[in-house]
Image 1 (cartoon, helix red, strand yellow):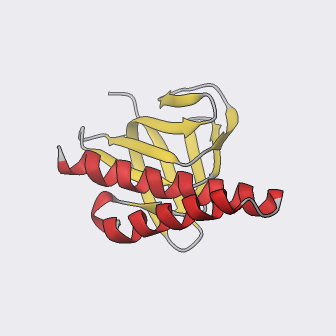
Image 2 (tube, rainbow, N blue to C red; image 1 turned 90 degrees about the vertical axis):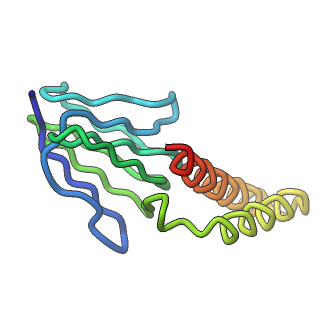
Length: 137
């Protein structure tokens, strides 16, 4: 099986380092797949679900915030602000965060506050989606 080297780093912790057979990253244009010997590229990551399949066929999913992916010569580097495994996600906290973001959006303060609230809402909804996905596995 063809593999590539993957390193995933978050601002507060390293998340993954090792060989993989496939990777799926969330981008502005939807989910983007990476396999061994992928062409070189740099792509922005948006809040969503990251899926890693290691060389043993085990799949790891995680909720990621915004970041960047660099693919070069069969090495992939992912840098994100935050990343959480489903078991690390506090469902109640994510629900509260979504409600707070919804309230901030409805208050219609400045455009900056609006965009910050949208980002907070996207992250909270994504965290809940990843948590629920893991419960049905």
